[in-house]
Length: 465
Image 1 (spheres, helix red, strand yellow):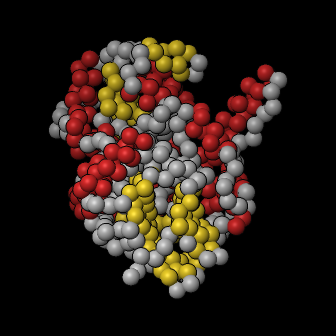
Image 2: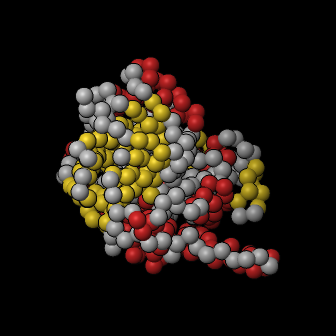
């Protein structure tokens, strides 16, 4: 039995693992690379396996860096089942169709530029038709339900507490009478998040493949994040400025709505909040449908108020015209995709607001190298947006405590429940985060930890005595 690390090796995006058990080949995740131009170009690299030889895919959750290359996999011949939790299957529909639309629009824009320059045009990474074909392959599975996608392979999704439907994966594979167990963490959620339940834990496995996004950071170093956000809103309200929050449409936006609904009246806030993302609006509708995944606090709130995603100051925009109108307003909050500020409507809002000192930009999640969000965090004083140089005079705030990812200590706590794994593989993190967490896992938990390189193959052997 073998595992090949096909992505998210010493980087945060592109999650993909190839597992071989006898004659069966399958993937855990098939995610897109996100970041600067170099990272995005990696999405066009040939797969290191034959897509038409892959028997099935096990998907941990619906974020694009975990599912975003599935339509390309289908485009190149994959016809097997894609197993995911029911909520992940529903969310993947809107995420993959939106991603396909972006691929087509970007290819069209690049083609126009190439034609004018006399260069060859480039096809989209995949099309809406490819995404629609991939969606027909999804099969929903309940948390905790053991299923066998192929002879010799048993699998179970457990709640990872990251976003709605997110899971870590418990796998048992048998070949020639030998059994190996392996757990893929997916993205481990931060305990105490609103709406969804805290992460479950796992205890018994031979191998653990674990994310390390915030393996070198403690979220509470910046103070209590929701109170910090409220203070920013109060300051903006007094000055008549705007607050721009680049936010992932799936997960982060719904949490921000929940937090702000709780505190708006208590703190005397009355700034209109605009959710300027059609994708976020559709994701919120799916959140509304999957109440069985809510934690007890959200269930109590729902029983008391009838809704956790509406309140008087909250508005949802849909059309591009509605979005453009926001750039003529003052004293408002705009929550808009993308979460790394490298695409989508939020770039327009930043172009219109970064140069004004009374405004604020709040960064609430991980920012990959090369993205506009990362450049703002790094303190650049001038940035280019749509080819125009913009002065950065707005106040930029980083609030990692609002992240859906567990921090260093929370990852250690989650891993501490695993009883003496034979080996731990750290992925899904930048080098500094990975090696910081590696040192702590070895020192505190006495784990044997490997840090795979991209395309590295590991033989998984039974550890039974």
